[in-house]
Image 1: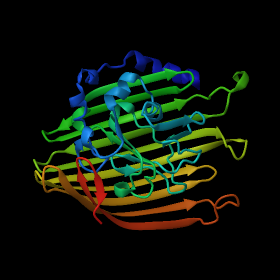
Image 2 (image 1 turned 30 degrees about the vertical axis):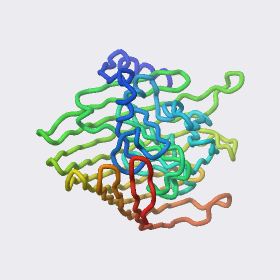
Image 3 (image 1 turned 120 degrees about the vertical axis):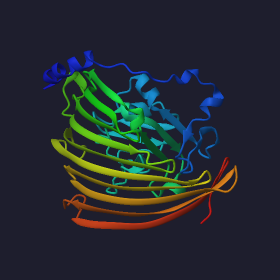
Image 4 (image 1 turned 90 degrees about the vertical axis):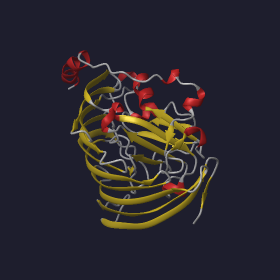
Length: 370
């Protein structure tokens, strides 16, 4: 299998396209502090004034450094703990709070939560976002539950992907590494008229086994093909609509830590997201987000889940230094778990949560107003 993958990927490597990237080293300290972030107070603001211990990892920096996946890029973030358990299992947390089933870090992709309520963690093996599609990653080190909810105990990782206007043309990239595996990414972007942009991408990943003592192969493999599509429509000066979705279908072969027998896990997932941003005035705007996510993992334990979420947020700035951010959310998630004597006895359940929040944001602080 590995020889076949190498032969398939070699022409793509030779045909890899070069594309221009902005050089952050040319920016001075004042310009770096003006990088826009949204994770600290759920509104766009300068990095230097964000009321949180926040770090921004730009997409240009990830590509220029040659990182092949998200966990590798997150190793460079100060205060973030990143450990690799095997070829596809990662532990990622902040400020030293980590374990095999880490459940205290909230991870978002364009506002869509990707953690599983099964144990409160993230399946990093299925979160194989092409690094070429990432605009920036905002990392908050410290509690973020005021705005983001109960799972943001010791941090938030907010992954923001590129808009269609920043992903025009054709891109082909590939990586080959005998230890980390092989990847191929193809992306095509364009315009439908003057206001509607799009890009579609496909990606195939294959991780080879790690090597144990004496160069003995360890049965840890992952094959994960995926595809996605995004539309960005600038309807007018006051309205912007984003529609995006993706799907993956792969498999993982690994040795369970509980049962020392190699097993194969099937991975399947789909998601769709719709976002509408409306600008009432220079001081007032709303952001409405709706998404659904379906995935299945056929392993021990098996986890099949469907989640839908609708969120609304209103940002009102009453002066140059202070604003009120308020909103609410409706979330419902249902699972279908295989009963076994070791972990689960309940087969199906559905949880529905209605929530709201209100916060006062300024250049130097963030406090609850509810």
